[in-house]
Length: 289
Image 1 (cartoon, rainbow, N blue to C red):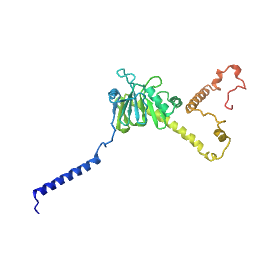
Image 2: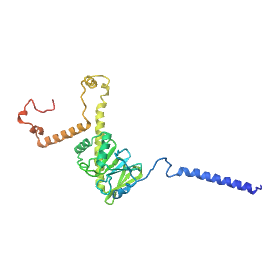
Image 3: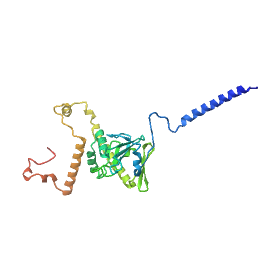
Image 4: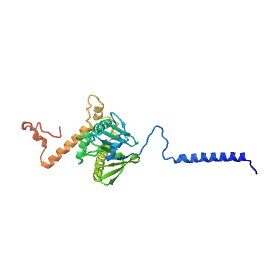
């Protein structure tokens, strides 16, 4: 069959259009970065020695509040070349800066969560953690990279760390979201901080689990009122419950007192603080009162 030139040109144009359309449809499923309106996702490569390079791209906040995406709270207070004292790195790729110290920022976050860090440190001491005690609340785990009791320090969110690798004299951290962080911390120190956090986290979870387990077999009594339940629901007889921080500090204090008693092989060491006339049968301190 013979075709004129106009017909052939028309068919070739349609064929070219069909090929272009097909190529566009094939390309869409293989886009490496999907289009996201209003987002600026970046993969961060952070080195402690060059962390000041992020100041120009960081968003300034007056009263900075950490959130679930925060993984590295960097202390800049020792650097006199910048008025900013803190950089905060997020797993979504954003970087925040503030003139507040890391102490103010981490304390604000602890108060926001509602857990007293002093109580956490008391519990840590009872477990043998006497320096760089992590802040642990459930699955949330922030550890100071140096002693945080008297000066601002950097904090690392271990709940966002997937793995660590020794890198020369430093440590390389694989962070959620494919971010990478290199800190001037030895691999031995980094491993110790992880172990301390694991001990404190497991202890908190076991404490909560065992307390709930103790009440589990008593559920059958909950439907029948007794003197305790009637007293509890009455506003006239109800007693204020102690804070968890107060309970933990008291527990640590009692544990220390028991250790002293075991070492001295004597009675209560606090009795020596009372005047002799108070040491009689009527004023004797015991657990039965």
